[in-house]
Length: 68
Image (cartoon, rainbow, N blue to C red; front, side):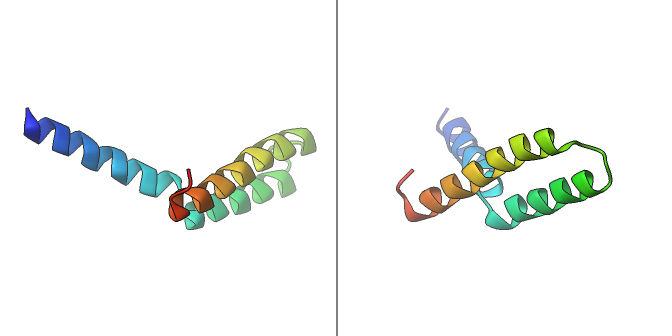
């Protein structure tokens, strides 16, 4: 049972590092802008997704500082 708990903690930690990695968020923002430029999404959808990514970037800073 202890091994399962350890594995789960490792998986959660890896997922958090991936989710809060500023480089991943920046790539997502760049991809979003490309989608807007190519007409894949409209301005309203761009703004909605951009807001969510910018919120995530702020959360990432807080997570990195241990304040989240």
